[in-house]
Image: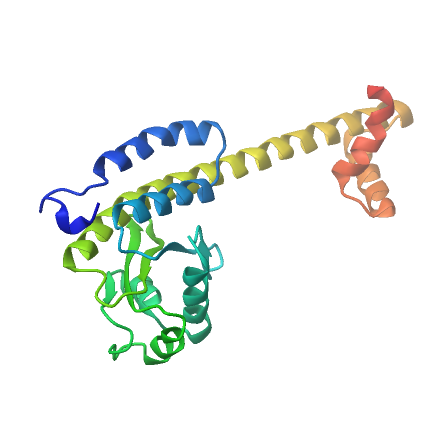
Length: 243
């Protein structure tokens, strides 16, 4: 269904996005990653705006680099790779300016001339892209590529903006969950290491008649001699007791 056919105040995928949002709790509980969410986003975008020959998402990673994820085909990956290589293009502009960008025909476009010239040979002719922004900042952008000129009109652009707004929330939620899971795992590992070190100190105190501080110094000396961490050395010391 084309967004040109949608009512002015409505978006054809509102119901679909509501279903995806409702499923987010299930995704999180099953520990699905951001990529799983993006696969849903790309699938819905391609189904909703049928003029698109390719759909993809560019994410900004933790180092500030651009990464194409969930691309629907080589057209998307090649066009995106050229943007990253040349440092220009509609998707990068959408990310930089936090505003949607549309090209009706790369053959006539006067912005991003190097990128337009580079992709013209691949058959790409028109583009629309919108940033995915929440209060935490810009997470990336979703883009639609087409092999026909003038494939996307103002209502397609408006639909993609509203779509990106909803998609941004899903991506932000998934990323927040991943961060929480990672920190939780690190916290558990820290507690485990602390407990191992405590047990190892007790073992040395009992075996060698040491006080707590001297036992800890002994553990550090053993770790340095072994070339491992205090927790690894502690695990070796207490392992026989555990068996």
